[in-house]
Structure formats: C-alpha cells, structure tokens
Length: 114
Length: 113
Image (cartoon, rainbow over all chains, first blue to last red; front, top):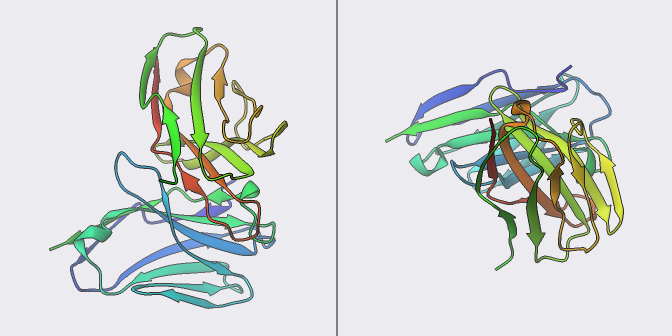
C-alpha cells in the first residue's frame, strides 16, 4: 500500500513558466514533508520541507504548499529553469521530522524546455 | 568537503556470491540508512541505524545485512545475492535532530546475474 503517491511520472514545462509537482499521502500520522531533487548519476539532494503546522514554505523560486485536509502537497517552481530538469521525490515523516521513518513517493521527472 | 561516499559505483556479480557495498560519511552524523531505487517503485528503505551498534529494519530488509561498528561507516552486506536484488542503492546520513535533511551518496548500481 503506497502511502506517498506522486501520480504524474513526468511533467514538461517551458522555461520561465511555473512548474507544479503534486504529491498525495494517505497516512494521517505524517507530520513533516520534504522534497528531494535527483539528477542522473547523482544521489538525491534536499530541496525544501514543510511541517504540518504550516501550510506554506518558501525558499527562493521554490514554494511548497500543504493542504492537510486533502492530504495533498505541491511544489511550485517559479520561474522554471532548464537546470531544474530532474526527478523530484516527495517524502513524508511521521516522527516529528525525524528521518528514520521517511517514506518516499515514486518520483516525477520534470523537464524544463529552453 | 562534507559527503557520503559509496563504493563501488558499479558492480556486476553472480547469484550467491557474497558482496559488500561500503558507505562512509565525514559529517559526524548519528543516523545512516540504505535505500534502493527501482523503476516505478521510488526509494525504499532497507535498513537504518541511529547510532553505533544500533540498527533496525526498514521496509525491504530481506536478503540484506548491515553493521554499524563505527559512526562513520555503514556497510550493506548481501550474503547470497539474487537477481531480484539488481537495483540502484543509495546510502544516506543525517543528524538525529528534527528536520535535519538527509545527505545521500551518489549511488551503487548493482547487477546480479
């Protein structure tokens, strides 16, 4: 049973436009959510996170929105750049932000076209 | 440079031949973990360790062993590899403090024939 779902395997956007990556979760015990970015031949790198006590967190061009009632979060990238092309993983933790029970989604491949 | 180092990057082996994938971090992290990435399945946790001599199973531990004799090292051991363990493996580490992000190694691509 998949507890963290990224239903779009891929997404293609034009440079300068907004990229919106979505993630749904089923476990109401999750209270901390993260996004990781992965380039080919590299390990994932941390991008941005949000605690369940917030509904929005912003870091430069990246904003994560959390809708607890819908068990849904999204990552907005504005403006999108070709260097943002990567696989994005959504992850969730149910232990107050601790990593040791981190559950990942399957990932979404974002392609930003020049 | 702060990093998580995995070796080897690529490994081809045969069924039943014991192998070890090493992982070392230089950030004094208490927490270390192993993941495997498979097409259509994302990242799944194999084992994790919260400190020296403390290890626990993740979601897919069958067929794997780990040890944590030193803080910096967390090797992944496949005693008798099988073809279904062909995968891309990632080691990761972090501090135990809340919200400390995971730092990942660059991966080990294992093929078992």
